[in-house]
Length: 406
Image (cartoon, rainbow, N blue to C red):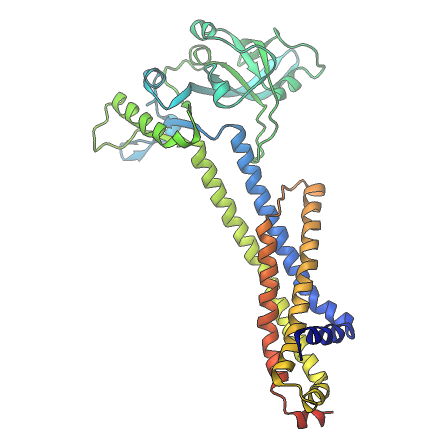
């Protein structure tokens, strides 16, 4: 019996038991749909994280004070004062792989205008900070080197701060707000970036000249961070090596001494987050894949029942010349047909559920093309593995005993 005839017989047998065939497919449908949805959510979340990080630039390098041991106790890096203005000046004047560099100091507290107030963070930075972090202005102008030199009381404010302090709207350029009783004149409004993938409001901030924050608000001479931008993402490693050499020289560290600073790149952060999201996705997919195992067992169970019910039919086929291979192939085709059909329906349901998760629950989803191919292959393998035992049982029946079976 050729393949076409075997396929027709298999389809007819399944059509005679539509409801039972559908129940056999249901486990595969649910399993494949679950795998597709888990992959879509994992991939979508990964792409969302990468997009949010990329908005800040993929060639950003951040230098922070390193932890230190004092009296046998490891100090908090944020309490260290190892980054000085001399480090910033050296980086600015000596580096070859850096395009922009900006010092950073920060403070958090209440900002007030009239009867309105809100809590925010003030960052003291250089004008190049806007290029490093890819900030743009929606209104007004940025502060200048002259403002840096004079420690001017000027600031660029985020949209959230504007909305909280000026709910009535109108032109806010030139208005004076107060941060910890310190008056600040608004000269520019930052273009909104919204919330990032970590749930942080990127617009709830104020940018000021770093000299203003250091002298007038914090009264400190050290830096909390130095932000840099490598020429290209590919040159990040060379830039880090260059920065390390400059800082070790400035800090008079000997060959055996540990660095008293840490250097992290945005590229490193992106790779770490991608690796974390991949691990989470794998866990979700493995959990969903267990339903495919259960579905495969269900198919084997149904096919065994089918063999038992059709024992007499098998005996008649064998008595008129059907070989054991033909009988085995017939039941194997039925098993594979159930699995593949269920897989195709599961892929369709998975796409629908992924769309629903994005549309109704605002979950970032993205169905990778390779997940469809993998799902199809897995369904075929399940059909073969769990259909083989029933097919072998059918092929091994004795024709005479099968005909006499009641």
